[in-house]
Image (cartoon, rainbow, N blue to C red):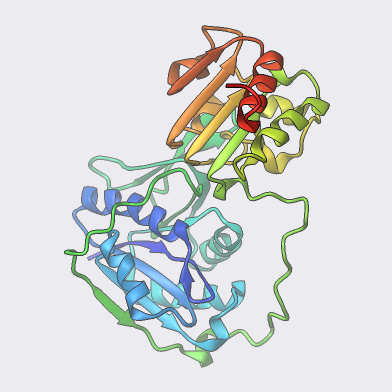
Amino acid sequence: MSFVWTLAEQSNGQLKQVSFELLSRGRKLADSLETKLASILIGSGVNKETMEELISRGADEVYHIDDPRLENFTCETYANILVGLIKIYSPHTILAAATSMGRTLMPYVAVKVKTGLTADCTELDIEEGTGNLLQTRPAIGGNILATIKTPNHRPQMATVRPKSSRPLEADGQRSGKIINVPFNDVAWLDTRVECLGIKKDTVDFENIEEADVVVAGGKGMKKGDNFKMLKDLTSHFGGMVGATRDAVDRGWIGYPHQIGLSGKTISPRLYIGVGISGSIQHLAGIKTSEVIVSINNDPEAPLHKVADFGIVGDLFSILPEIQERLKGGTK
């Protein structure tokens, strides 16, 4: 039986949220293929109870490779492990997150097993009749969506944008197997590479994908200096500032803040779009937000049509009013 695999990620013995997001994608594919879903966990110090959450959120089996030397990600050793498992089990499809780990590891593995890889996918499906994985991703600078398949080689491999899907609800009644795979240090450990330490993110970098509240600005902000208004607003929520591609292209704010097909996909509890018309590219990056608020003077703006709450008016009048109310200055 050719399984669907997802690659779990861990840090300090704790699973990252993207591990569960991938399982929701993998579960749908495995059900379409009438096969099983396995989660591959490489690392150190993850306990049995933590691994059981992978089963409760969709995995039928968990392949666990544990060794203190695997605590920190090194591409060469992790790739040797994954290639070794592929040769033993011959999976149908492997999914990883489009994180720094997934973007580094998966191309390396794809070359070693001589198969294709589609990066940064936003949608996945199974082609009826062939079992081919249909991998949809933005192309031509995010202006179109391309669907790619790998008909002649296996496994089929793809990286998936974080926050582009929600994890399945945990089901404590699900059963599955945890398979502890012994670490073969002779075949798998690459002694040429050693992790000397982990560099922390730079001070000005914001991981907008993890934010619970995002206030984003578009072309309607008129100039970069006006993004301070959005920063002031986020200070009330502990949120982060986002932007459309138009705003980034104009140099008003840096690329790490860009949301959409050519930027980040986010899934905050609250998204506020300010001066954003709502192109299809941007909407694709916010579609899993829990609550969407749109502030725009155009009542026909596409973002208004998908928003839970729409405010039609001049943002330069509305934002100061919201600020005053949040400060308690206006009843």
